[in-house]
Image (cartoon, rainbow, N blue to C red):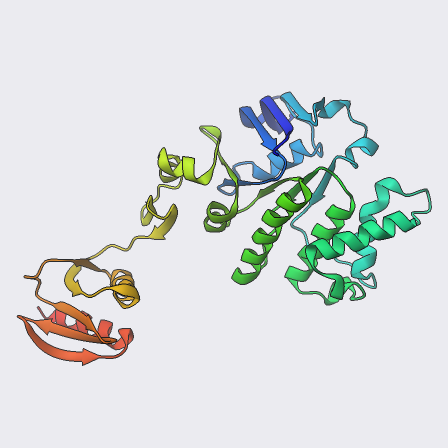
Length: 336
């Protein structure tokens, strides 16, 4: 059951100035629910980090209202906010001689006494957080020996140990290789479901966000914030308009983007399946479009994992690799 945990009414964010305020974005109206992964997308400098800092009360809003669990953010004390919001930042913690379990245990600070000693219940919560992120085996490793992915998982476990209903993350997939990015986004999506928490993050990994997120926030300077599911934003054309750039094409059939190369030549390709798709991809990357014109000067016939180059209905070369095929086709086309 999705619960509305964050409500934003006519929010304006920015920075105060001695003479004039600097407005980053205004008239933001939105809500965020539990058990969902929401991703904030936008160009560099558009204000994603400013919005995250404002929602988490790290910096004051210019105007408007932010309700967390039905209570305006300004009505919370710092101690109360620490039990409502946990934040995972992009910066790598430069820490030595602290174990993963000790770092995750710091998430219990809002609940411990002056000395910071963990109770039996605190220890259980820490163990649960480690298990939820599946890093129990790293408990006794020191932070500085971890990979970027392991370190990021540790910080997420720390946020879980803080036991807040809301978790904000700023670029959690930065510095990670592609498989680790996928794993991180899948982890956050799973945690939103299993823990019934509200997870809101900023990211530049558009493709992953469109495939994994439940809701997308598109932030731009002119139009403010546009919100919807990836599918709804694809159908109404918002994604296509938002990311419209030369060389970038949005495919409505897949809901994803692809790079479009300028094509100087064209050939006819006959075939089907994966081989056909890969040949077409390689041709387009090399500036050669694919059509079904049987009168094309060069035809590629794909059969039995072989690539037959034909001209005037006569096979002139056969290859078993796309690399060799492309080299031959390019040479034939430039000679015409």
